[in-house]
Length: 119
Image 1 (cartoon, helix red, strand yellow):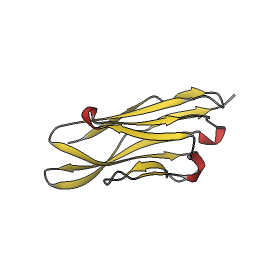
Image 2 (tube, one colour):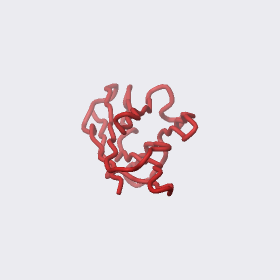
Image 3 (tube, helix red, strand yellow):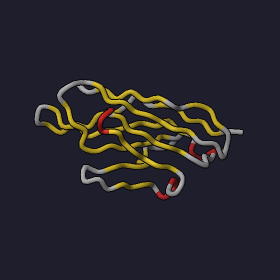
């Protein structure tokens, strides 16, 4: 089994920065691709940023230039650096990883962490 554990959410003011972390635990797996999603109140879960298995990085238009996704393969950890936060960034943020485990490709979700941007 592979589990993702998130950390770093909280309450911040507009213009502040926050870094989310997501650590993968388990054994015998390799991470192929990673992503961050978010779900705002009353809205569907939406992709924020991802790094494909080929290394391509993609961002939602709403966060381009403000958010940065990254990963540390040695630590099996992914990050989302969020700068210049806006009230509309308020949401539950979920990490997601595509992993190879016993020859199978699996998608694994974190439990979610709440980010609230408010003055």
